[in-house]
View 1: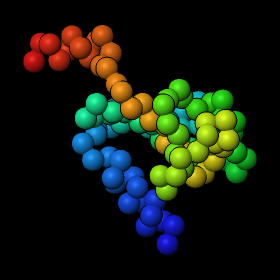
View 2: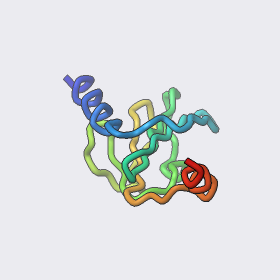
View 3: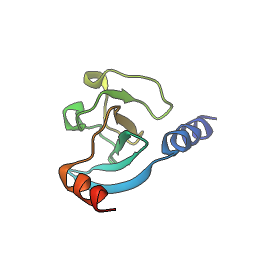
Length: 102
């Protein structure tokens, strides 16, 4: 069913990535992952009323929880997670300094 497809998509996206952070603002949750030169955020709300797409973080690609590409302007933040991708990622200056030390 749909749950198996969405769990499979999540597992594929997580390959080679690590959890970075979780935040919540205005009942919108954002979990951030990075690794292998990519980063993505999973965005959702537990509320029944969908939130505006303008609350999504900036990114190169937006997909639904099944991996289907959706236009950012058409995305609704709801109980169904939205994935926002940054496809070419450079580490932050702080992270670059930490990597240079190791």
